[in-house]
Amino acid sequence: MKKALITGVTGQDGSYLAEFLLEKGYEVHGIKRRASLFNTQRVDHIYQDPHEPNPKLKLHYGDLTDTSNLTRIISEIEPDEVYNLGAQSHVAVSFEAPEYTADVDGTGTLRLLEAIRFLGLEKKTRFYQASTSELYGLVQEIPQRETTPFYPRSPYAVAKLYAYWIAVNYREAYGMYACNGVLFNHESPRRGETFVTRKITRGMANIAMGLEDCLYMGNIDSLRDWGHAKDYVRMQWMMLQQDEPDDFVIATGKQYSVREFIDWSARELSIELEFSGEGVEEIGTVKSVDNNVAPAVKTGDILVRIDPRYFRPAEVETLLGDPTKAKEKLGWVPEITAQEMCAEMVTEDLHTAKRHALLKEHGYALPISVEDR
Ligand code: NDP
Ligand code: GDR
Image (cartoon, rainbow, N blue to C red):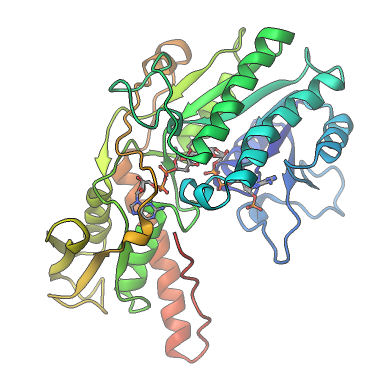
């Protein structure tokens, strides 16, 4: 039985990858952080009672900033595969916590590679690094492919640039099987609530049920190549099953604006929006609505406003990936379109919003989080 170690197992990708590897018969180990509240919601459904014999998913307390902890965990497990998905992954937040982001996302990757080497596992343990389309930043070529020069535009992207190259370096210097997956944005109902897609689907669902009034957005002209996390974790595993390690762009090859994503989400809730005004004055107004689906919304309501607090000090305006290499060398093609994914996210968020609305109606409402960013 193969053993895999996933950093970031409690995150969006980590949870889908853990499910995927368990189905493939792996023994899966994950690193979770100590937190003052439970933080395993995304993996609770696959977590087995530790009192049962031979659980297939094992969680270890740890942190990418803690060298001795990482080295001990790897020495205990001696994993066949390490998937480094752990990161401070929010681009806007990285401008506010640049040093921490560098430590976790950049040096954290080095700590793992060095632990593998130090323990003499460099010929046994295969390593996947969660690289990112943010490396292309101020894009030098459209679409972006494996050979496109990098131009990172945030402390997050600069930290990930270090991680990308240190993985390449350990491959070349020590013959390690280390791969970079340069993944374009991928989303799902498990996406963190402050990334733009989830902020929109959750916000729109809450508005439909009368739990929020308006979505406050940043740069809605921004263009992204959005795929589904389920499709992308499959590719992470495929990359580690080849004869030779290599780096791959993972993308859909299709691009849409944030405004379009807002429009799709509204339509899923039978709301037709009309955008008017320019720049920070732009608003999204309800043109028509089916109150059987969105009971709290009226024609003429303003559901979208621009708030400059969500603008970034340096923006990545446009990203579009070319997944030809992944298609040709690995036979990978994404199966879920951005529109299908949006529909799935809205459906799940509407379900949650309805539950909250029902609790509110009966006086049992808990406050809903409206965390910034
Ligand atoms: P999430 O933000 O959902 O998950 C990040 C995970 O990293 C969480 O489990 C988090 O733990 C953990 N983590 C954060 N800080 C530390 C730390 N100091 N030590 C150990 N673990 C830590 O990200 P995604 O699942 O969306 O992304 C997975 C990886 O892929 C990340 O590295 C991200 O940068 C990268 N990526 C993501 C893309 C995307 O579109 N989703 C695209 C390209 C790359 P906790 O739950 O406790 O916060
Ligand atoms: P990104 O994702 O920065 O591409 O990084 P995010 O969803 O945060 O932003 C996408 C685009 O939408 C614009 N935007 C807003 N973004 C947020 N979060 N909130 C807003 O209110 C808002 N309004 C407009 C942003 O400016 C941006 O242009 C994600 C992360 O998962 C990274 O870890 C990963 O590496 C990259 O995708 C690929």
